[in-house]
Length: 268
Image (tube, rainbow, N blue to C red; front, side, top):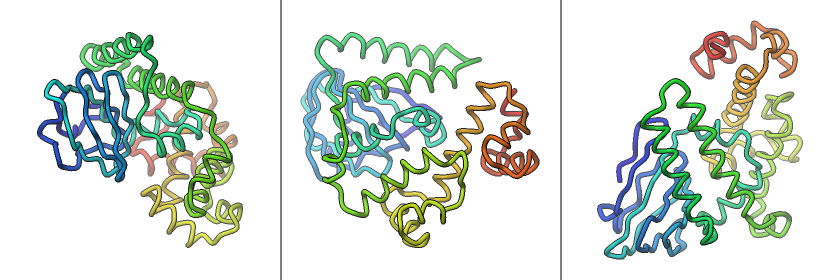
């Protein structure tokens, strides 16, 4: 299994070449056991992977395949940062908390056929669709993550108590970004909400989420801009007003800096 350079890379592997070594991962990764079994260590915790089990791994996960049955094979789907961000935009924040704690998802036996169909559909989209492939891949990936969100146990304060104070601050920051990023792009605003300094917020976010607070805020704002450009007929001026930009000119410069594209180019 080789980490792909495409936006979404698909394939099948026995993982034999990775036995005993850390897996090369993209930004977000799905591994589905097709047959056989494997013991996979994720961040120093062992998981038994059986047929139809889904493992969701982040780029910074330390993932080592420790044991494989002789008949083991898996389907893998590597998703780069840009696509993963678009997929995550409409997902509930509780899902990220759940997957961080529980990377192994086990569908019910009667749902195995649906999982096989999902795999065949994403293969077809990747191989045969061109004009709308990006949108179809994004929607198809969102569907499986939303399925996991539907099936996961209800999370809340009991789950949060399992995290350190620093980790809870990071998850609360991400929740605040989802709530306020349409209005607020200042790191100081979020630090104030959390009753910590911007410097301390930058330190803990870099350590836990492998990014800067400003980078995560800008990513979320950019996704909001893309969603408005893609799904509404709002003018650039109206989008600027809705997202609290000084004017359309500033919005244009901001979007070009974040994406390398003009607003008009993206909308077309």
